[in-house]
Image 1: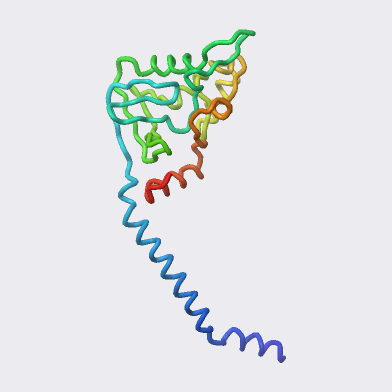
Image 2: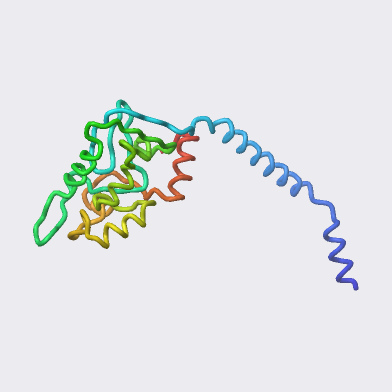
Amino acid sequence: MSRSWSVRYRRGAPRSPFRKFLDYGLTAAFLGLFIVVASRLDRVGASHATGAAVVNDGDSLTLGNERVRLRGIDAPEFNQTCEKAGSIYPCGRRSRDSLNMLVRGKQVSCTGWERDRYGRLLGTCSASGTELNRTQVENGWAVAYGDYFDEQDVAQGEKRGLWAGSFETPRDWRDTHGGMVEGEHDFTSRIWNWLRQIFHFS
């Protein structure tokens, strides 16, 4: 009986001044953060770029002044080599050639809202109705990097492109050759990019 009364008494006891200060402080902090984020959301609008593309490698291109990194895929670096039938071949150049063939003589359109740590737009691009991100993976000249895993499974099963031989993943190749650091384009990456764009940190 006394225990039940004690519990009721503790629940109804007034909060200490410190607890009140802490509660009000946390509420004010969350409200302040909400106001800051809301005031900066307009900085994270979708970007669109259209025009003739200059292909840099198998997963990046330039449209006018806009540098675009194809989102959700990762292609061999331009100087990367791979192995097929016991021979070494320039798979990075082949991957770039594949993307070049997809955009040659066509208008390219890219859309995205994220930017990576190098300021490139992480976009989904198309040319004459063909989505470039998806097609590079389907043809085996890029690997899934946060998206397009079903397309990669098909390419691997049919030994297309890179899957006809053996290769280092582009990410591993960059790690061992001092290339650009780039995380996978997954949900965590999206949150990080969103915060980077709002608060302008690298």
